[in-house]
Image (cartoon, rainbow, N blue to C red; front, side, top):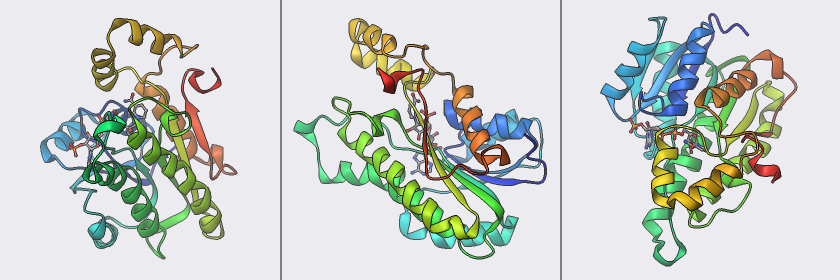
Length: 250
Ligand SMILES: NC(=O)c1ccc[n+]([C@@H]2O[C@H](COP(=O)([O-])OP(=O)(O)OC[C@H]3O[C@@H](n4cnc5c(N)ncnc54)[C@H](OP(=O)(O)O)[C@@H]3O)[C@@H](O)[C@H]2O)c1
């Protein structure tokens, strides 16, 4: 895989995001130029500092401002040119037991996990905003495929993402834009540690055991993202690719 002279937007690129950082590092190693997106400038600067190449730029933007995404993307394209692809890794994560769900919470999950993704796909697929054979990759979740207790909102927002890539893939095929989703199960890192603390020892052991190949590393997710961005997957569109250590077949 060679991404030299290719330009990608990566959302959720803050240095303390396990998966977002791994995606940036993999694309950087393969020569891509990146537009790193997140809400905290300092966390994006830390990612830039960790990169081998120094040709990356950052854009501080709150993706929950979904009404502003189209105009922000227009400015990005004016400043940096048309993109070769997009990776939407930013997300709102957490637990939402049914007894306490509020309308505000529904918006928190869906704004970033789904609505922002859809607005990004819509904006970057406009004429002159993308280069030939562009590829858009959404980071979904195994939770979007299989139910999980107390995670209704997160799971439903990720299921909406997997549905969206199917319809968007059909609609954008005539522009040769591919749209896919990568669905990790539990990934080793800070989020997994929080999850294990919440669940306690017995449930954590059971969760780990439900991944027959073991938990994925952030790099495993990044490898699949690179595959879906690259010409190696030229005929793959509209899919959700699990990176789940076998979680979904159990
Ligand atoms: N970790 C896992 O085990 C796991 C499992 C399955 C799926 N996933 C999915 O994989 C992706 C990455 O997960 P992760 O745990 O590595 O991510 P993470 O640590 O939650 O990082 C996500 C990043 O997104 C940015 N972000 C959040 N809200 C934003 C907003 N409104 N506007 C702009 N940026 C925003 C945050 O940076 P700022 O605070 O700087 O904005 C944050 O660093 C997510 O889509 C997640 O749902 C993760």
